[in-house]
Image 1 (tube, rainbow, N blue to C red):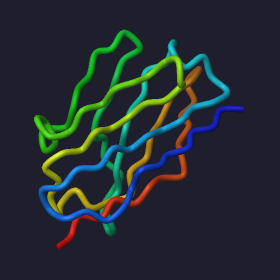
Image 2 (image 1 turned 90 degrees about the horizontal axis):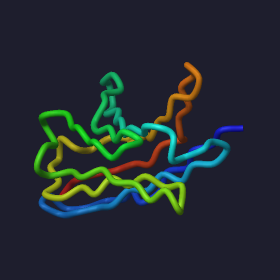
Image 3 (image 1 turned 180 degrees about the vertical axis):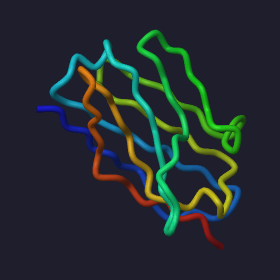
Image 4 (image 1 turned 30 degrees about the horizontal axis):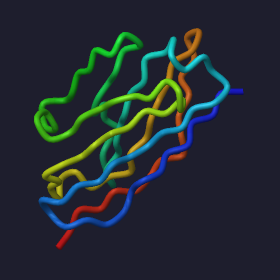
Length: 115
């Protein structure tokens, strides 16, 4: 059974940093691409960053240069380092993996950027 568990969210002031983690189980982690998404109140869930199994990353334009996605295959964990946070980054952040055509999501972790 595929399970994803996010952690690391919280309240941070504008300009601050957070590192989100997503621990995966039930999959051969190193063989799967991983992604981070976010959903702000009243908005649709949007893709934020993706990391291929070969280590290629890409980002939505609004976070380029500020966010970094990475993975530790030994720990079955994907990370999202978020720097220079802005109030517009406030959202619930989710990680996702697609396995055999099925999408699996974590429960989400709240990130609030406010002074």
